[in-house]
Image (tube, rainbow, N blue to C red; front, side, top):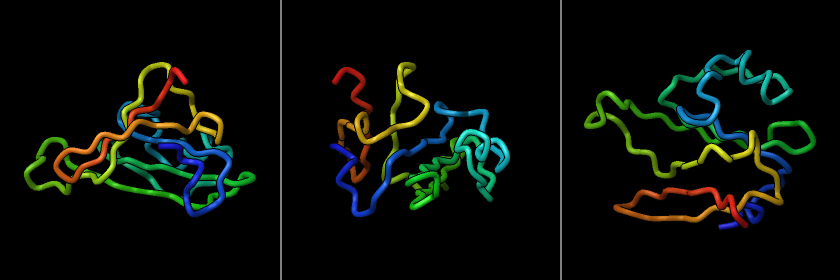
Length: 114
């Protein structure tokens, strides 16, 4: 899946999760990484994807789950799996992911060896 074909324009996006920027939980830390002001805090179990266009937020996706109590938690419809070679952010030229679907759940794996 190439994410350049989304229904909105973007030039860069960031993924915040427990294995990609796990240290960024406060709005100040997220703002520092994005290079612009961000107004929400997140927790370690959250998934946040922020799409930018010309340094402005144009779209964001937020989902969370409780990893200690998965029975009572909402299942994430989409999750990203990134290896240690994943860049700090994605641009149109490296936003290609493999998709695997199981039980109504989509997992996106970054294609690091294009």
